[in-house]
Image 1 (cartoon, one colour):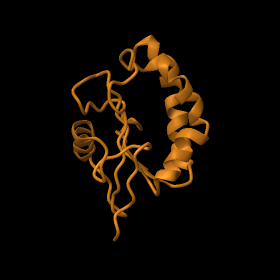
Image 2 (cartoon, rainbow, N blue to C red):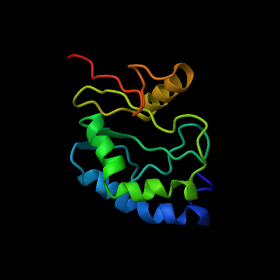
Image 3 (cartoon, rainbow, N blue to C red):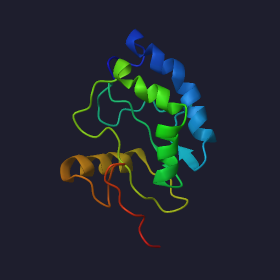
Length: 137
């Protein structure tokens, strides 16, 4: 982030956060999102840096997540992200497959980020750009 969550530079993002979460929750393919008692995950510090905003969700497919991210009203916030977020030096998101019914932990997400950043995209941790098929079950 360009400032802490309470910083005025983040006000436009914070003002949209509740509606973006509600949009995700109601989107086709949405399964679950990690949230604290406050209803979001803005308090979570996965990388011991108050300027790294954490979000974790489960979707039925990469395509459904992609629809939410790039083909819903979420796109407006995405287009304004440079107002609130620095350009990342490494991938700010990671994708991986989970078994039906599994809700990933914050630590699991951190391990997937670490693997992506260390090794690049793989079946263990990938991106929209370099996808891997769901494992056969």
